[in-house]
Image (tube, rainbow, N blue to C red; front, side):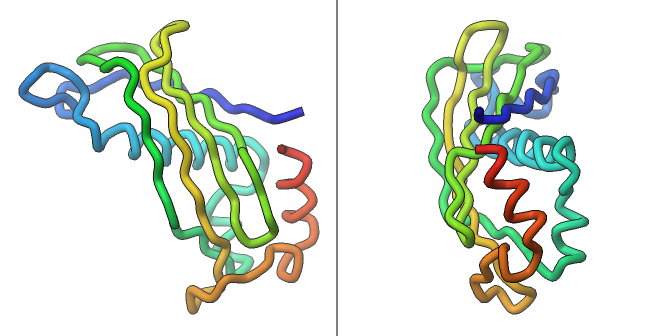
Length: 136
């Protein structure tokens, strides 16, 4: 069963634009919050992954805007692993206000070594590889 994490955030005034809605770029920041907290909850925060000699640069970001968030809205970032292929991992996100879907999207990342060369997780840490596979 796909593991999902929910991070709750309150929209800050500085995150809104002249129209009074959240600026489109902020949602990608919230994807990062969701991803970071999802991994932390699973016992593999970014810091720990980096101590293994792995990095996780972003290869692709997809965002679909359904409805805007506004100042002081309480929102929830729902994060899950969409796919994992040993080197590439894709996270999916739904940002909601209550039951209302505001934004959906995905980020695709590549596990690399410190020289930014693609590196299969299984070759570096089999436990991490198995943990990720269990979360899908």
